[in-house]
Image 1 (tube, rainbow, N blue to C red):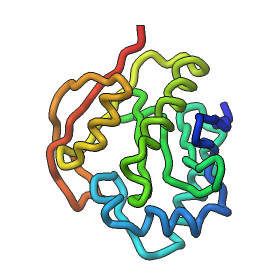
Image 2 (cartoon, rainbow, N blue to C red):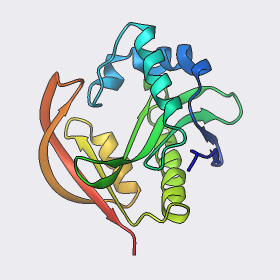
Image 3 (cartoon, rainbow, N blue to C red):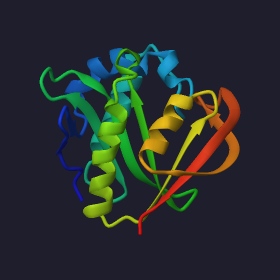
Image 4 (tube, rainbow, N blue to C red):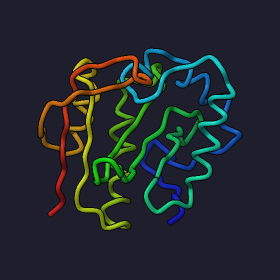
Length: 176
């Protein structure tokens, strides 16, 4: 199914486009603080960002990968992304998200993920999701808990392109 455009009160969720490259690069791809506990590593090469977006554009028609660009409805400024995807390694539907540092603390991630999960539950019919965060990133844990996930276990969490090995917290959400 094509990744649809979704809307919340403040946000527009839409697929990334190649025209977003510069803004994405400046907003979070080149920011080591944003990447610190993500799977990817920050970089200072816009061609890497272009490669990331090219991959995302190629996934828009996928039935197991739904990434949205989080955009302010009024200003059209890009804040970050949110993702619902099938994790082949874990055989589970997972969620992920990132936001440019200057947009942290405004509830945008929770608002965007609530809408993305509503789509996943009511349109795709998904009944279970997994989420995780590094213990050093409790703000991400608060987002996960606000979404209704329940803590499951601690595990080895490898992030920042393999540069950081830490403890992660794994959560699960089951829909009745």
